[in-house]
Image (cartoon, rainbow over all chains, first blue to last red):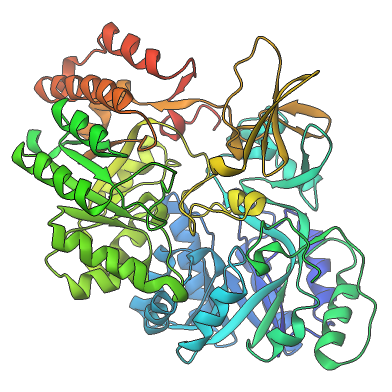
Length: 290
Length: 335
């Protein structure tokens, strides 16, 4: 079973991103997803920067994927996706993770293989089958559905790898509006890139103080961290890859702990406010222990 | 041009369907009484008998009937959705509104003569995505998520042969439809799988010394002072705390009203305007349909001199329950 690092969902400075991936090159990861996968206004990293990171990771033996934006609103968004596709086509070590159907139309037209991302709503094997026919060689299970949906999908799965989001704040929703800018009464187009101030997003609490959600620009995430530690042995028998989502601290410990679980070598798991309800078809914020 | 600018009205049941037809809808959209559609609310929607009667009533009066089958089936319950597609075809509906690509493939293959619309729940916000569904499943119309600006909507229209339908009035999702798991995160029931957001069965209103509290599955969504009207606890419309501020952190509880944009929507080639609200009463549906019929007739007659009749606004404000109205993403005041 392979261990993957999902795309960075938060907005960090260029230097922070470069340092992070330089460290990740040394880590026991099999696949690393790169690129901006949330907001089209985030440009700390230029394409050349991402290609530089990709080269370092590929030289370190990782497979590298470029993730596309899940919300494509404008021609310039489409152009960015096409540039990523061109880069991946020119380098056999790179693959695209497509996060909406517009990218898939173009990839299929080019005959370019791709990873079908978790925002595509692949809930049944019929949808999976047609994405496989369009060129998907791997798909990412949508984290908002659970184990019985996955079992149903796996039963009639085409010849394609399955990846499961196993650890990280859950990406729950996308909007054209920016909720980080809204908090600071800024217009989206003059947002002052306030996301840079919150390397793990902005915590949203209920009026009685319960941590509930995380605001990350146009994306809304869970406050709790999705965590499939106990479920890993069962997953290992059925899926090919599991995904960890980048976080600003303790990434090394987290990778060591998950790698250890896969290899049967005990390593301490970082503590956290965890949830796993979606996996058990319960409210996503629940923590199911049975 | 005049005949192809349709008013698409909600029908949560037979009385609403008849009211919409009587007040000038060109199309009504409905759903079966289960989780195959995104308004799976108690007491709502159609059984076989009422649907047959509704279709006959509408067709006799030259009005089309659309069925929304716009949730995402899983491998275990797949047959329920394909049976719903088959039934819609057998009943002679004018189109089905789908979100799941696998189900579109099924409908296209099994009922090639059946007209397919891409639901707003399909999350297609650009022409490449819409053209993907066109090429693969021959969809005839796409309903756009309520996140695009007017210029972006126009750009979509220019680059696809697919008819474009947009929301004109009613409740407003601030998230990209079909890509929102907030309700599932809080309640275990999501629009995509269960067919409802923030479902009523887990809603609680509690009078407390600090005001009326509204909760969803136990989670405090808002607290209202004595002089405030306690709204329904839709998750994204509550007041929360972020960095020491308490406010509508995601969205104010406003509703969409795009009457003033009608000339622009007609000019850029929008083919249909959708009214939200299958969960609303027949009286509501009748009132909104009447106003929008009059407005759409007026704009078609003379798009250059279209003005909003004050009576229309009075009528619409009366049923919006004191909520403020917004132009939503079309003019993007927050941009």
